[in-house]
Image 1 (cartoon, rainbow, N blue to C red):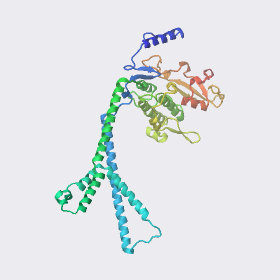
Image 2: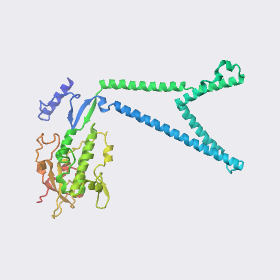
Image 3: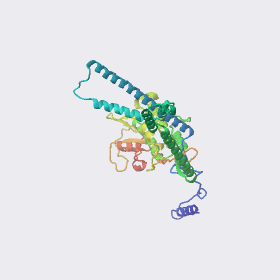
Image 4: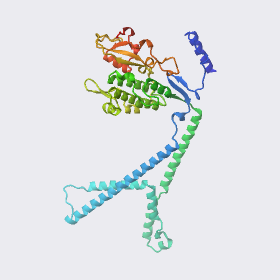
Length: 445
């Protein structure tokens, strides 16, 4: 009832105060669990926690156990290699010392090294003992050899031996039982395993209860609409493979890369909070990147490999001073993106819907049409809109991408002079056509 009252109040406010028309047939209350809600170009849905953070599958668990076993075997091999090297080094030192003693009858040094040698051997001995005590198998083997099958444990033998020898043997067995007997270590290991198993069972129980009682919000990018937009704009062919955009044959190389860069960066910035952000990264890092490389290769009548060797996959270009610049996000940057919050929901389809074609004109310089800019060193660009180039009506939802914005058709083929700074900002998405004085357009034949 609370939801119904809230809906009625919202509709009453929209129709009464704001005098807006509300479609009553489409205004309905939906279930957030089985259905998706479209909001700001994203899909919202209430899902169990395991959908956002799925538990490891049986295959992944087996792979992790295999990795841990391989890691343990590698550690044992390294430890054995260290022990072997120590034995070889110790034998070399002892052989050298023995030969010197036989040849000279003793060592004569101006300095004493007894403390250093004693410290080295003490360190080695401590490490060996620590590794031995940490191995349950080694303790079991030594305990079996030192305690089992000894004739001194037989009563009729003990009665025939001197009392001092029997007492010495008993004290030795007490020390063996105290330090080498693996029962205590085995109990500690079993206790640790039981504790780990109990913790896993507790986590499983908590996760099961949380799965049944708690819902989380999943935000997904409309990947099918993004793919449709990529295909409609000409980044890919009907098979979904990258292809060059014919319209971008006139701009300079830097402008072409900037155009692709701003489209990719806006998608990455807008959908950074989505659960399926990985699919958006594939679209930007693969389809847009290789479409740009194919466009540059087509413009210079070269192959894709030659374009990659010249521009690299990061699409590096050089300015007038020979300094390399990278406008398109690198593969490493795209790989490291994700798990961020949506801070500034800028529209992602502004630059995608238009292209600016630089004109070669001998006319006198015009003032920059950007607001509050009086620079005269401008270049004239012609606006080409995507819907006019494709001859598609943006109001036709079957041919146009649902939810994708469109620029007013009256701006198509208009010419606007822009200074280098503002054309760079327009390409990179720092400004939009709203920051331009539309009354200052020029007429160029």
